[in-house]
Length: 272
Ligand code: ATP
Image (cartoon, rainbow, N blue to C red; front, side, top):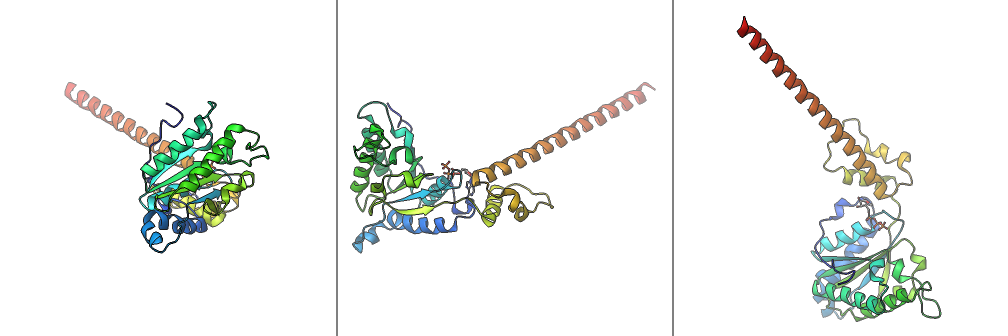
């Protein structure tokens, strides 16, 4: 009966190859997520506490969500995604309950990657009075998040990933050992990464012979995010489809005119 009605974990379809660039983040995530989610027993046998969480940070639209989904897919784990603001509820006490429900759902769906997007909305630095960014509800959510993260057992099969554009605004308690203790940078794509994003976005589009992806990834697109690049591809693809449809319609109209003319000729011949 709340904001969390739609808690529906599923294994996402995103593969590592769908993500352009970000080699470092991909490699780090592979290692971080695969061991605890796919080989938890080995870690336990060796008496090693598995990594429980990591923080993805960087500008908007550069692949944080994609990375989280690919990481889950890679180990056939479920993916449960929550936006930070969804956890904030104006009703007293509801927010902590929401956090508990989210972690319960993740445990039930284990192996599960639990992804918190827009994390700064709940993970903000608490003031001396205990409130996060002056917001008491956010502080309660944050406290409950810490409790839940500390309560994840080694064999629980839950890995937490959080994403933020403003890592410096987060409460330092969140990044202590045993919590989100790996920080992975997800920067704006450089030229080779932009070229890879173009290739990934256009993987199924037929390209004209004179399209030069490496050139397009150069200075013209400097400063664009992955989401911007994907949008450029989407618009180009739509324009191409529109041209295709117009050409097909013109051809169909032409065929119809020819058929009409042929019928007229037959008619005239018959009349004669
Ligand atoms: P936000 O901080 O706004 O949540 P984000 O970093 O999580 O953004 P994503 O949701 O992963 O960004 O990316 C948004 C869209 O942009 C993707 O669905 C995809 O189409 C495109 N995109 C972004 N980065 C990449 C990339 N590295 N490779 C391929 N596509 C990308």
